Image 1 (cartoon, rainbow, N blue to C red):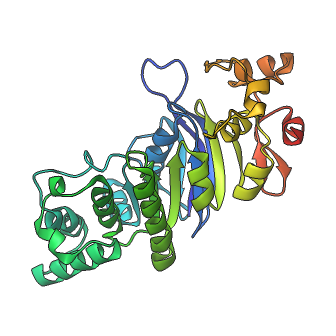
Image 2 (image 1 turned 120 degrees about the horizontal axis):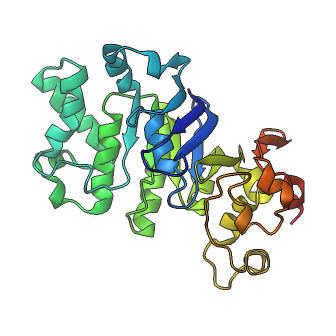
Amino acid sequence: MLEVRQLVKQFPGASIPAVDRVTLRVEPGETLGLVGESGSGKTTLGRCSLLLEEPTSGEVMLEGRDLRRLSREELRRTRRHMQIVFQDPVGSLNPRMSIARILAEPFDIHESLSRTETVERVRELLAAVGLPADAASRYPHEFSGGQRQRIGIARALALRPKFIVADEPVSALDVSVGAQIVNLLADLQQQFGLTYLFISHGLPLVRVISTRVAVMYLGRIVEIGPTGALFDRPAHPYTLLLRESTPRIAPSAVVVKLFPNAQASANLSGCRFRNRCPLAASRCAEEVPELREIEAGHFAACHFAERVVEI
C-alpha cells in the first residue's frame, strides 16, 4: 500500500535530520505501529508519507505511484485515498463549523453531491463512528474529547480512503476512552478494509492493534518486525528499554540493571543510541548499524542484536 524509500526530512537549523534515510513498507490491510519517544521523528515521518510535509529527498510510493512525481492535480485526486487522524481532537476541528459542515467539506472538494446525498453521507459517517444523527447540527465545543476524536475519524473516512495515518490518536484521551477509540479503529479497519500507520509512544497500545511494529530513534528505524516477535524477542537495546519501561508496580530489574543512568543524546556519527546502550563498543562509534534480518521478517539496526535477544 505505502512504501517510503530512503526518505529524508531535514529542517533548517537542525543538527540532524528529523527523518534520516528511512525505508519501510506498509502492506495492504495491515496496521504498522510506529513507536518511539517524543522527538524521534514519528509524526514527521507520518506527515511526509502523506506529503503534508515535503520530504528533503527520497521516494513516497502509494500503490506503486511516486507521489512526489505527480502533478498538483494528480496529487489532489490521489489525496482522497490517503487521510490522517490527528493527535489533538480539539485543535483539528474548526470551532466555527458545525459537524455537518466539517464532514461535508471533503465532499465539496472531491465530489459533486446533491444536498440530499451529502446529508445522507454525513449521517452514515456519524453512525459508523458511533455518534447520533443529531450530532450533525452541533459544534465541536459541545462534545467530549473522545467524541471529537470520533468526529475526526469520521472526517478521515469521508472519501473512503485506503490508507490512514493515525498520529497518536488517543494520547490526549483518558485510558478508558482511548481504548474505545482503538477498538473503533480496529472495527473500521475490518469494515472498510483500511490500512493504518499507527503512531504512538506507548508500546502496550501498539501491541494491541498492530500487525507489525517499527521502532524509531532520532530519525532512524532501529527495529521492525512482527508484533509478537518484536515484543517477545526485542533485538535492539532501545526496543528493550521501551518495553521494560512500561509502567508497572515495581521498577523493572532489566531497566535498573542495564540502563541505570540512560540519557538521550544525539550522536552525529555511528549509532545514535550508543551513549545510552550497555552493549556499546568502539565499533558503535565508528560504524552506523544498518537494518539486518535477525529472524524471518524481523530486522534490527544493532551490531549486537543477537546478544540483545538473549537478555
